[in-house]
Amino acid sequence: MILQNNTFAGKSKIQRIIALIVLMLIFVVTLLWNSVAIDFGLYQLSPTQKLFILFAASAAYAVYNWLRFRQKYTFIYFTDDDKEHLVFRFYHIKLIGKKFTTYKIPIQLYAKYEISHANTLPELVLYQRTEAGKLAKYPPISLTALKSAELKELTDALDMYKKN
Image 1 (cartoon, rainbow, N blue to C red):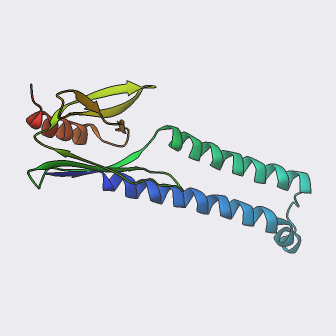
Image 2: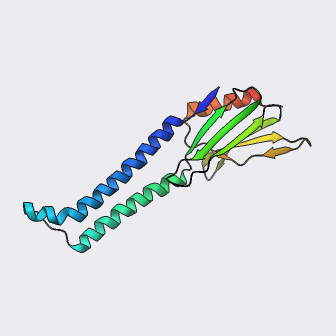
Image 3: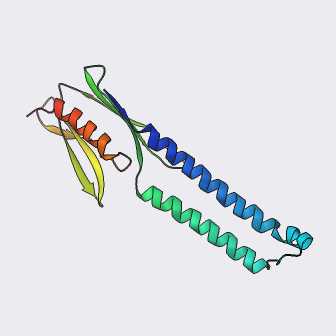
């Protein structure tokens, strides 16, 4: 079985590109407004008004990106196709500095999973048995980008491998 939320990741990238294009259009129109306004007899913007428009647009763009960053949207790829390992590949969907991470857990050593809600955001925590018989805990994976159907599919797959 393979589970991945590449549709969400693609839509997220398109939304960020559109937001950046809108910001650039606002900059270009604001900076070139007076030269066009003279030709057509329209209202001309003062330097203070231009600065305010540019600042407001930049602030709105920054807030938009900050809110998306705080949601911790994560691309997740899960597979159990090789029948020996559970493989999780994931990265935080953000503008720059993507860190790709892979967890490859041997099925024989996989113990359990938990879905915790750190700061009201759901996170998947995986556990693996060590050779000493203790449980090792993996760092959490953010689940905010998964739809409820995808989350149910993931948990059903993990429940199949859970050892009591």
